[in-house]
Length: 278
Image 1 (cartoon, rainbow, N blue to C red):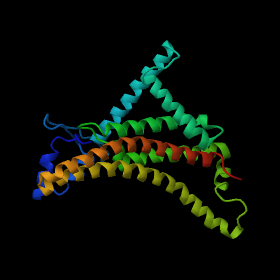
Image 2 (cartoon, helix red, strand yellow; image 1 turned 30 degrees about the vertical axis):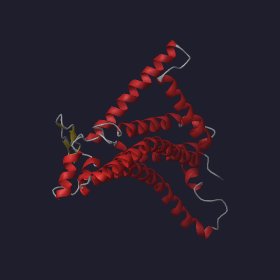
Image 3 (cartoon, rainbow, N blue to C red; image 1 turned 180 degrees about the vertical axis):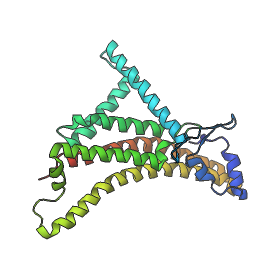
Image 4 (spheres, rainbow, N blue to C red; image 1 turned 90 degrees about the horizontal axis):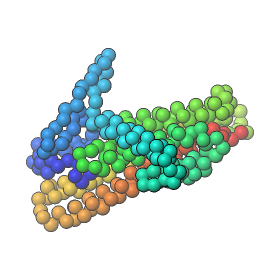
């Protein structure tokens, strides 16, 4: 992220002179071009279908890159097991992460029947982790700092939660199980509405949490570097760079933690829907 845009100095100078007041958001928000300054700018193709803007953006590009990286990695890992049962290198790392998701996330939160949901949880975990790390590379973009991306991931979790609960408890049984056992009859309509709204607040929380955390760190780094050009003094340079570097290293930890939290909460909500209290 510190090197994410080499033309940051020019942008900050424009901001300081009043020519560009949105220089921070320019580096955070999605766009229809890849800024590779000083090598040039790649304009991405624009697509429109039935009045809908389906243009390819930089966040879409880096989601594709993340997916491609995961496909190639897991194909390589699967082939390595055919050659040797003892994992080495990248295969060993992937196995550790898979076992972590299975033993530390899926099993404790879902319990019996967690095997059915493990493929989804592993997909979400590795995809978010890869997107988060890509955003820390020069010229890259963090797809998970896009609310549309995190909302889509949350909707997928929402569908898995509801489908899992319905398949296990039946359609009527699942929605009946949303109500606490033994409540007064007159409270049933109120509690049912409250619990029904609760079903939608869970994916909302998942989407906002991931989006906010992946966006906040980048904004702080850019703001710290911007102090150098705004204050126009060399005395602030070591302070700004030191703090920006600290936040950047913290972002590495945040990238891992946010992938874990999204997967863990999704697994927890699945477990609550799958094993309802009666």
